[in-house]
Image (cartoon, rainbow, N blue to C red; front, side, top):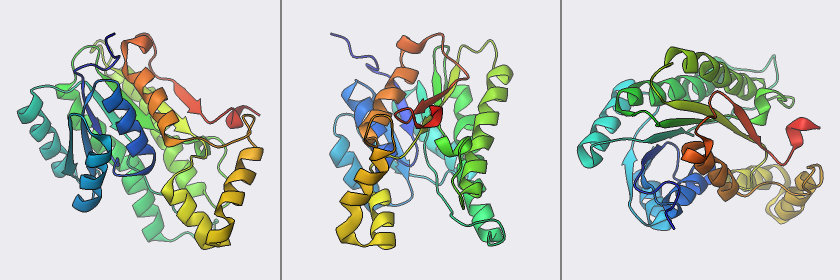
Length: 253
């Protein structure tokens, strides 16, 4: 049986851990040749070992346009092509209105909005008809919790990007979509819960978060990967411009 991403070359940003790593693992298992990026070589090397298959890690900062252009030159030199891009790299700053700092704003919008632009724009010349872009959004784009206005605003921004960009690239044959997770059981979430509530209470906190979800649980990173595989494969050949909420239904209730 031919795998849905057989021989496709994929670039996935922010993939050393968390959702990005889960996506990269699913891409590799579905036949893709995967290039992952992140900021730190040691974390990238560990992720490449976990992913296996035809996977390489390249240190890159999505907020630096020249660095992202250099990344795609390396992809072109190594593979001669590019089929799909997953703009996953992101950060979150938590502060209510009245306590938001300039540094928090610049960092959040720099990575989550400018970083998406700098990931997608220089990739376009390499993407053929049938090529795909998946931008990782968040349910916070429509339902930002208290204190997450910066994060939610940055994710709403990339949703607006994609609405416009599919018109800008009309006729290219390239599809762009947004994949918006809800709560995902990642190491970063567990670290945040441990800091807030203590290490002994993390599992109970995860369970409590899941109880509020229509599925009765929160997501696994690999489930984000499965949705990203769908949006990057021919199975979604007439799907473009959507925001797919992969959140167990939380954004709908």
